[in-house]
Amino acid sequence: MSLFRDQGVVLRTYRLGEADRIVVLLTQGHGKVRAVAKGVRRTNSKFGGRLEPMSHVSLLLWQGRSDLDIVNQAEVIDAYRFVRQDLPRVSAGLALLEVADRLAQERHADRRLYETLVGALRVLDDPARDPALVPAAFFLKTLVLEGAGPVVTACASCGLAEPEVELVSFDLLEGGMLCRRCRRGRPVSAGALEVLRQVLGGSLGAVLARPAPGCTEELTALALEAMEAHLDHRLRALRSVAGL
Image 1 (cartoon, rainbow, N blue to C red):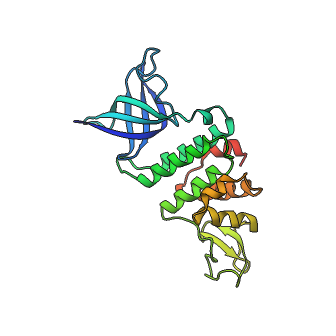
Image 2: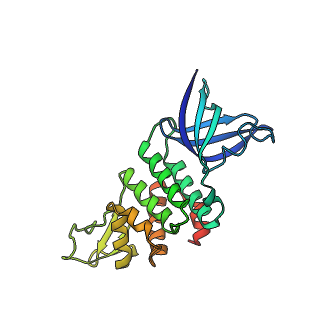
Image 3: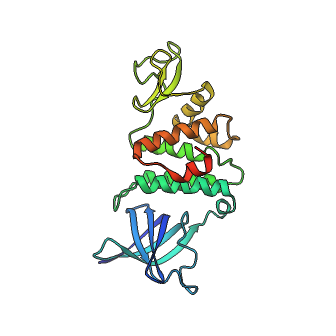
């Protein structure tokens, strides 16, 4: 049994008994952690609204012999209040949490996934940024972290690259873009391919600093299908708001 400090993002919560709640967090140093917040559902709880989904918090946790830790202290680093005031941003944020929850492993630190999630939530919380492309960008970047990033610079089937061939479609089984001769799967416009390359090629900040491109819906559908195939799970949060 021991105390430890960490920081994390609340992915989801659920009730335990009459007054307690189990909090599922993606932490910086301990991976996915499940902890009991005692008395949090009482009006006089010392935690108040600090342990709500999407909150970024600093924690003092007690690790016992069971799979559940106990929250001893919790202080808010960022509540992402602007996100919570805007329905499209809330929906996008919940989509990020759903994917992070599926990808994170219990007690296995993944600092890159943690930092990618925190960075995406900060973008969503910026009133100057359009939130529309954030879920797709997050999905694509986390697929890269998982070693499942799509091939976008050459045909994933024959290996030929532009300008020798024109890349025109995306196939999940092949793992990326296909040329006109090998094409199958989902058609991809030239504009969507260009943004896809920017997102995966290190220009994500510049992409998100601009208004959402006209191909946002196309990219979202592509990234969603790729992530669902990787997880073997249908992502409800984003499909419900995007109508996909």
